[in-house]
Length: 140
Image (tube, rainbow, N blue to C red; front, side):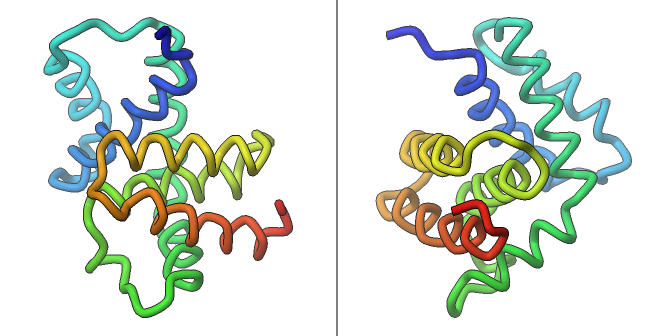
């Protein structure tokens, strides 16, 4: 099955955001360059461009994204969330708040990425929070 460049871009963006958490945000370009070189297989140019656009957007709006996620998560402080879940949520919240991609597409993509990289309950966790973020933002 062929994966669309946008879906692969979202997967790569979550992976890059995961790596970035361990680095100074001021080193974004160097971390991204290292990230792309560390992959076992090449990523199509369209997916790279989309992933980098998403990563830069998340980094630029990180505090607002974390506030939106925190506001909609019941009993879960953002720093206590699993790193994969936190980064899938950041990416989804960024797309919901700063792009015109349909909310249903964003949420479905986030659920799939959470299924791919997260733990057993990650998809449901991500779905619940992003659904609330979308409703609060007037996207659903």
